[in-house]
Length: 277
Image (tube, rainbow, N blue to C red):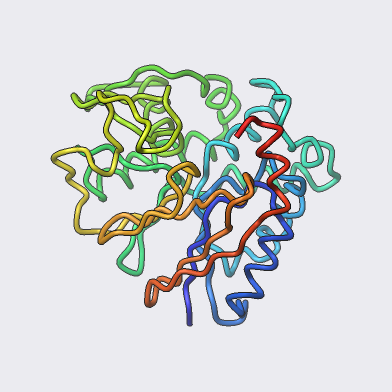
């Protein structure tokens, strides 16, 4: 049995299918780990969501920021952006079934000697603590008051973790860390303003996986989210969003031996140009 972790698909269904052929994915014995952001910006978000739903017994996934955006918009919160491509899901006959399933997916996973989260973890969180915090969000999303949760999801504050945070501030910060984070300030505050490459980062920022005092070291963390970073593989950080949506690659990492498979996505370069990338 092989386990393949695949970076952000974001509605790029055809490259996703091509990548599955490239790795010779066998749904009878292999498993996919998906880093989140199944949907949005690419042209076939509904097809991706339907495929993953239909193959859920062979898939482990975590929620990304675009998945949460879809859930919020579907309940009348937030607004559609010019480059969103989620209306086909909102209008689909099976849309509610897919959305109800999606909001019950985890924020974080651990297994096979790895942990997986869409964006990253704060340095002061151990893996076990992060899993407990993820469960708090999962309870809010899957419970009877999920609309109240989604209605208060948007926002960039608070920016600093303390164990005594409560209510929506606590849940929002957990969500922002796990689904939106790239950088922290050098004194440990969440910074969501800069989204570019490492080389161009302001001097006061450090990538989350290089923050000092990380308490989750020792368990390799699989993540996506940061297409400008690209594939970044070291001993305990396996970042695999290689920017298919922007004309880069869609990447799969076989966890059994850490072999990387990458499929070029040149057809999506026009999307990148239209977005000014």
